[in-house]
Length: 207
Image (cartoon, rainbow, N blue to C red; front, side, top):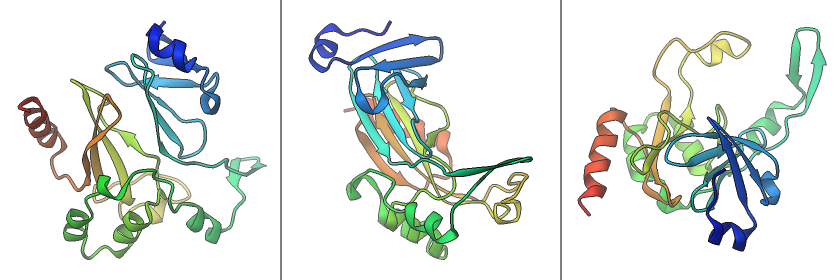
């Protein structure tokens, strides 16, 4: 059991963690939900489609990173298909990312994706259209790289009804979060994530 008495007694929040799984109690939005441990005592919780909460099970801090919604589906013999109009899909994707403007490096995004109007528009709208907010490596040494896809790879549109992207030209941006749930480096384009993480570690350790 992950337990920090002072914080849990005050907030009435507790975590029960076993291996990679973590359950949370005493937090209404996530009551009884199971989350995924991602290193350094941190956990991801995804109660609804595209929705993400990140929790520090050692301190009890919780931050909601993105809003989500319940998917409405109809059953068919070959699986479930979402019953929703394309217009609604487009509109409800806006403003799902719950970060401040200072936590997005619009200048770097505009420079890197100048010719990609779709990516620029999604960044401006804080839209989550193609896949959920996530992380490649989880938390390590107190930091985590969180990705946000602004535009899918070119194969996406040809594979909407099956298959997967075969190219690596998706327009993604990354933010760096610490275990206090602060975004210490804003969402920006990153060409070499491993090198970027090494630079961030050196930068913050020297402070």
